Amino acid sequence: MTVSNTEPPLVDVKVTNPVTYLRRWWEKVMDKEGVYFSFRIHPITAFLIAFGLTAGIFSIGRYSVNIPFLKYEVEDTTKTSPTFEPIWKETAFTGKLQYSPVGSKYFLITTSSEAITLEVPNNLDLFTLIGKRIFAVGEYNKQTKILKVADVKDLEVLSKTPIPIPTIIATPAATPSSTPIPTDVIDNSQTNL
Image (cartoon, rainbow, N blue to C red; front, side):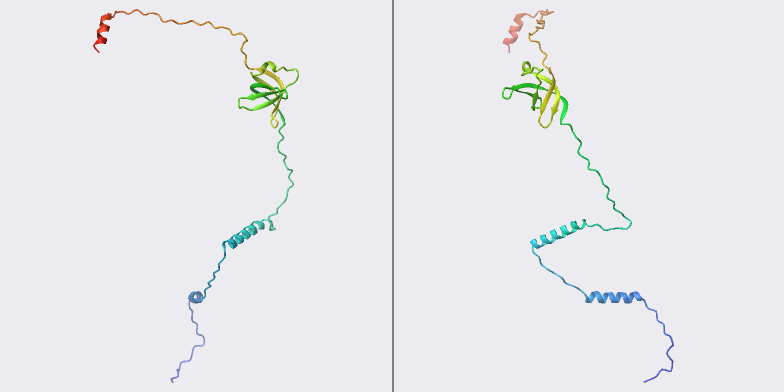
C-alpha cells in the first residue's frame, strides 16, 4: 500500500445544489409510497349519508362565529301590519236588474256575468226597473258581494210610445237614352248565338 505524502487539507469545502437532493428525495418517497383505498356501499346508504351531510351543512348556519371587528346588532323592528283595506268601498256598477221572490232580493247581473246582491233601502222602488239595465251607486263589500244601494239610475231611456221617424222612399227615375236601339237587332243577335 502506498501512503500519500500529501497532507489532507484542514478545511475541505464543497458546494452542491440542494434542490437536486430534495428532488431525488421526493422521487424516492413517491416511488415507494402509495395508498389503495376502496369500499362499497348500497344506494340507500349513499342516500342516507347524503341526507345527513346536507342536514349537517344546513344546520351549521344556526351557529354564528364571533368576529371581533364585525359586530352583529339586533334592531327591534315593529312588524308592519298589512295595509288595511276598508271592507265597504264606495263604488258603482252597471248591469241588468233581476228580482228573486225567494227572500225578496234584488240582484244586479253585470256585464262580466257576476251576480251582486243589492240591499235596497225602503225609499227606493226598483220594481219598475226589473229586467232593465241600471246604474247602481253605493257601498260594496268585496267578500260578501253585497252592494248597499244609495242611488239607482235607469240606463234604458227609451220612450214608452214609439215616435215615427219620417223617411223618404227613393224611387229610381227613368233616364232617357240618346240613341234608341231597334228591337229587331236585339232579337237577331240573340238567335245567332
